[in-house]
Image (cartoon, rainbow, N blue to C red; front, side, top):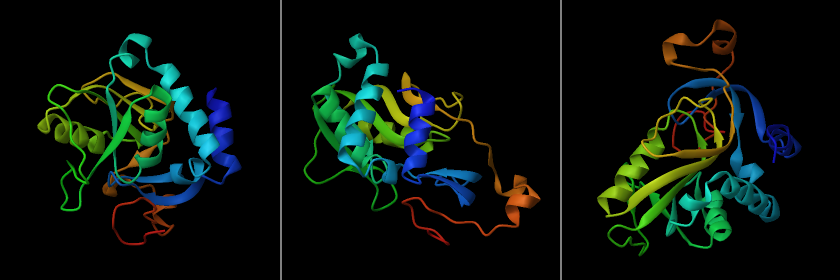
Amino acid sequence: MTEDEILSEFRSVEALLEGHFLLSSGRHSAHYLQCARLLMNPERAGRIALAIAQKIPRDVRSEIQAVISPAMGGLIIGHEMGRAIGVDAMFVERPEGVFGLRRGFAIEEGMKILLVEDVVTTGLSSREAIKAIEAEGGEVIAAASVVDRSGGSVELGVPFFPLIELNFPTYADDEVPESLAAIPAMKPGSRKGPNTA
């Protein structure tokens, strides 16, 4: 899939939003990618997972023993990546604020893991999830996502294979342009916060 084809998929399901958004990273943006809408169609989600799998070098793909994704955003694409690669898919979640495995999920010592996210902006959630996987004995050998919002600048400590790289500007609280600050901020992501869309 080309970048234009992927963005066309986002637009076709009204998953590329414009306004003032407070991202889960805490930064502000005039654009928000609602991957849940993009992935709500199982056929489309499967096609996107296959396209991501093709970006991962064959030698890396052949080592992957399981896929783990952070809940909530990574659940659908993580599951579809497990299907595309032919391995089990699990997820980490943070009901108490720190990622961990629950629901009977377990990692064997040294198990080689692919971390899968929907959107990566600063990489904070990915790095937290990697830390949790390593604490359980897993070895994250690569990461993948539908979108890298950092435009290629994010550092996860492992090889990273996004389907597309975008560089929509994001702003810290004290950097928000006046034109954007004039619009009430919405927090459309899965983490709790004010103005949740």
